[in-house]
Image (cartoon, rainbow, N blue to C red; front, top):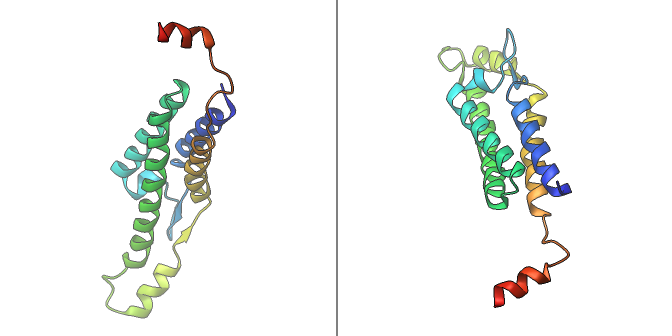
Length: 144
């Protein structure tokens, strides 16, 4: 297995692990991706699994698509989490109380894994290169 494929595979494994790590700390307990939005978390997990399969079978186009798609999904999930944090207490008529309670929701360390995994997978895809040698026997057979 080449080094860039190993980077991509490691990035997708980190992304899968990051879906179960705490990403938000509301007033009580910790939330992972599945607590935030279960179908969206399953979508991120499926894209990461497709990336793992593409990396194992050395399918560069599938791995590239899965790496970029996983980064896009994580960025959208982060934006949705920001909106959820800032609008979760809008039902309270007193604005100062709503802002105080929204300020108590903290982002946790799981975001590092959620962003680091796709970035590592993209690094593995971007720095892929063609093999340094060509097989002259197969090239000559194709010409005939």
